[in-house]
Each structure stands twice: as C-alpha cells, then as structure tokens.
Image (cartoon, rainbow, N blue to C red; front, side, top):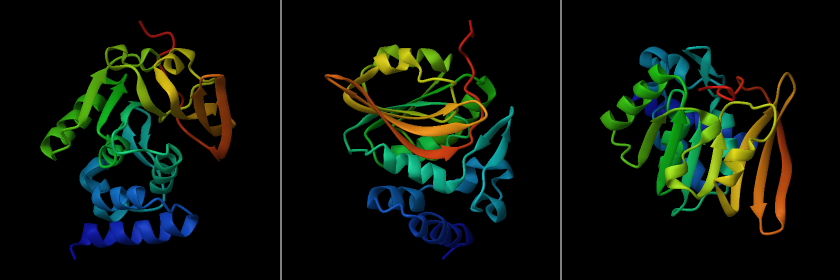
Length: 211
C-alpha cells in the first residue's frame, strides 16, 4: 500500500469511524479521495492529520472529521444534485462527487476557484462544475438542488439559498460569528425545520455585499 493510501485508511479508521460516522458511502468516499492533492504543497505528511490546513486567501481545508460529518448529515442519495457554497481547496466537493450525480460549487475568490477547477479536471472529477461568483446568490441556472452544503459561516441562514433548495431538500450550514453551530435545515411543504448538530468553527462567509 502506497503512503497516501495507508494514511487515508488510518484517517478513516481513527479520525472518522471512531467518532461515530457510519455511512458506508461517506467512509468509502473519504477513502477514495486523495486529500493531499488538495492540501498545500500536496504534503502527505500533514494532509491526513486531524486538523484543518491553511490554503491561502485566509481560507482553510476543513478537518477530515468535519468533512465526513457534514457529508453524512446531508443524507445524500446517488441521484442528488448538490450545491456547495465555498469551493476552497475543492476537497469537500471531491468527496461529494463520489456519492452524488452532480456537484455545483461556487467560490468568490477567483484564485481558489480556478485552482480547484484545474485539480478537478486533472484528476477526473467530471461531475463537478465550478462558478466564480457571489456565494449568497448561489447558482440559479441549476435550481432546484437536493442538498446545499455551505462550508463557511454566515451570521444567519441565507434566505436566497433556501429558495434554491427543493422541497424535501437539506441545507448543511454553520451559522454564527464567534460562536457557531452546524445546522441541518430541511425544507418541507409546511415550512423550514432546523436541527442543531454540532458546535463548529468556520471562516466567515463573504459576499453578502459583493457586487
């Protein structure tokens, strides 16, 4: 077994399964996606550690457990169409792409979005589509979405993005400023149902006043 495959196996066993993530689709996706290619300098030694990593532009690649937890919380199905807000390094989108039919990901920082798009093309992630633009505006051309996953923290649930979620769809979003809570927001015919999942710490979601 080559070093990155061994590191991924150890990551999944000790950082993810041991903390209660049980969805086999999620565990397999975490095994399949080489996190080191999305990490700074592609460093295998640090890429599989139990921590977030800086990727420049004041952004981070999330801790592996958080990526797995959020992915499991979304209750994904094979035919789902997912909108990701905050492409960042591209790692979360790559994990999602192993489970669902299509991933549409929006990044406001052009350098990050273009770099992630290049990685997707070079590594065969052909069901991921990248847009450089305002995260708060989502991607209207492809609505409605079965799942919306937000990987940065707004100060409240973005209402425009809720409009892009289909009835029965789920939004996974960290909400708050200094104190943040990861929420699962389900859109029903009778309104919005919100569940508190986990205290978290994400970079702020930018773009609310972006022109």
